[in-house]
Length: 343
Ligand code: ATP
Image (cartoon, rainbow, N blue to C red; front, top):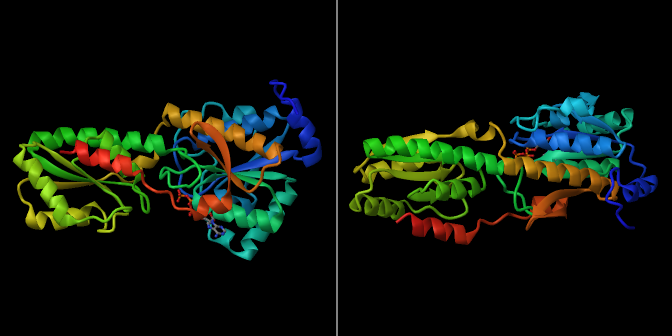
């Protein structure tokens, strides 16, 4: 069917006569990430644009179980595109993993006559969505909202770009003080299972070494690298450590290095939750907006149980089963670049 280019789109309206989606709900789940608000806004406004009743579910699956649900109008999502966090709040819900919790969630969707769901979150959120949609036959589209960028099937997740920029800003500031005192800093960034934030922020911050969970960390090689820097009269050294590095985070690595390398005064900074908050970058806002629109229009085209993602700038839909099962590899070229440029 030809797309008229007008909104609401006539072909979608006709398709929806068959699908009969009259109302949708959106929730945010798992860890928050900057850009979730921009995504909520996009889902709500696209829903309204297509004549759908659009609900917001508070506190993720926990709110779905408790019926913490309210209809959202266009004005309810005004002035939030630039705000970090999530106006819908988020939660981790153990109850949703139980048959009783899911049944209550299903009952609430029926009570509000919600025909389809948009779930913004990480792989745990999609695991829950997959089970829920299979049991209660409700179409769900997931949107990747996590700072870790660890999901298979999308080049970027919402919040990743902002988190990297936050980490780089912090690294730059620490570099100033490190250079003034001839110090070696170990900076821990987020990433329990994935070193993507560490790798990109480390390259952008000119780190002397980057330690990620995807590659084995050899302390002797690290010390050798740091010693070379000292021989070349480096006035400061930065080692970026992903929190999930197998040695055990920045404090543990610093402790091991300190035993054999005392040329510099050694300090440790853990960036922690700083990386989750803050104003989303333009890139995250645009990504969130695109994925929000794509998710609602995807539902109206009959897509279900998939994650909306972006690959090579194009919108794609990846089955939940693939998105949660496959491990996202770290780019070996970026690791190489980091190695070359640290000399
Ligand atoms: P982040 O990447 O930021 O941690 P996430 O979505 O992976 O986000 P999780 O805490 O792993 O965060 O998952 C969010 C919620 O999804 C859980 O609190 C739980 O309610 C639900 N969930 C996760 N796995 C399952 C599952 N197997 N069955 C049902 N629900 C699940």
